[in-house]
Length: 574
Image 1 (cartoon, rainbow, N blue to C red):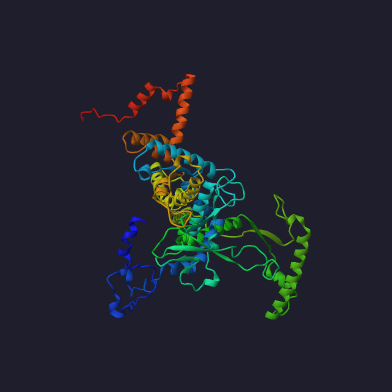
Image 2 (cartoon, one colour):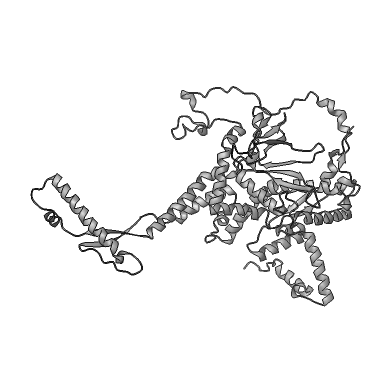
């Protein structure tokens, strides 16, 4: 029996808040003179906001009814708007980059009760090398569909989260295709996460997720096919009714089977919602406005022509027969004349190739007519300031700077570019920790559990990662496994605007004990251990071949260090 079991009786009568199930009666809003409260934001008399009604709802009541529409629109704008698509790529490039690197940080003090730096280094190098072979394999062992490697999968997770506000994946155990490891990750389309119609009235299930009394998800209901996917038509021999599988979140010993990531806005939230929801209307209007201006410019670049007659009206009426003129007579004569005249013009124009506006051809017109070139459309010119304001709105909703989204650096100096980059970097780091790192760590733990159990991590031989449970092959994953699987992830480099100045700053931080080489190299998207090993190999090769470069000459290095040192002010103030 575990030590904590002796104290369970102390909590037998404890009350669990759980999920909300009751209702509270709220008094009606006051009327008349009492309607004016202490806050102007709650003013019910001011005509500008009197009709502003926003009823209080649970977070699920706000999100779930509109989620399908919002998600469909976010996908549409991502497919068809180059700026929004570019913003999505910025998320992937600034968070994940081209290679997502593992940095294992085991805690030997938790595992052995003492600090063992030599074992930690041995474990780090072995695990990282074997993880790299598995995760970056050209056979894509990491992906259950064998289409994406690990880095591509993390980029996909980041893109899905931007588009839908959540990510869903499942852990698979594949034994039939020769993979060196059986663990693989299968992404699940969020449209397939829905409640089985047979259990639509089950109060424990909401939008395909079964919750316990504390509000923790314990199982997910996944539809076997997408609701709108291509397939046999209803009534055909191959048609089959849709089916749902309910998958527990974890195995009995704690191994995770479902990965569902999203950032909660409020408590009791079941599903995520894209952050672009607040700007989708502006995104669509911006896209439409841009299309209309382009169409207007195209129309203004075309020719429109009209054939007009110069015959005076008295000649027209004389040619029509003269005599007593009545309104009815005028209408009849004009109709007869116009019919005959226009028929002649049409016949003449139809056989005269000179009427074609092609290059410098001069048309030969019917006698008494002329060709007027007219402007086919008139519209305002593209307003760059107006477009910039719309793009700034979109950039704010996507957490990127205007300069990065628009690729417009014409009004940007070093200070403003660095400030914008810093704000984007902070946002990207939070998303990296919330989505990319969390997804990567969960999948790494799944792989590491299998690798240790199968004996492929020799430095972990003899280490018990389960607490035994009677009657089970595996117990529960314990704290030792958490200590083994501690890790960081090195994603995209921060980027440098002025490499010389920023390299100087990095050197000063290291030499003054404000940072480490590991942290500074991580900013550049590099693994410090690999860099140091490569530097050692290069130094040994230089010594063997008798090479000495200017940048490595001790005398030159000392002179450079002196030049970089702050100059002391020796002036007397005059």
